[in-house]
Amino acid sequence: MSKIVVVGANHAGTFSINTILDNYGDQNEVVVFDQNSNISFLGCGMALWIGNQISGSDGLFYANKEGLESKGAKVYMNSPVESIDFDGKTVTALVDGKEHVESYDKLILATRFSTNLASNRRCRN
Image (cartoon, rainbow, N blue to C red; front, side):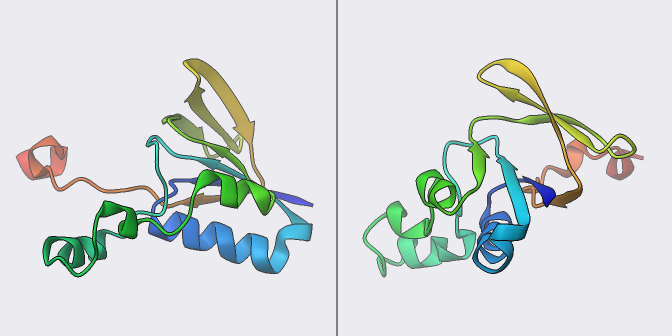
């Protein structure tokens, strides 16, 4: 059995988690870390909400922690990843305010991005 750690439960992360669990769940252990309190945000749906084509922001989420856990994933919400040791194959995250180290065989990085170019060192030079 292979252990897969997924960092980020945005749309890309959630899609990956569901695909793994639906097709290869009996062959893999899936552990998920996300720094937010919700998962599966569909950013592309913002235009639908703003245009009143959906009634509220709830329509921008199609999955939740309980659903992924019912399929077999271990999901840590509000748990930012502090570091990744690629050589040692471990992820260190803050879980309930305490350092938690999780080993992995395979790693999926599905993190959100920032458009704040001022914080990017390459853009300042």
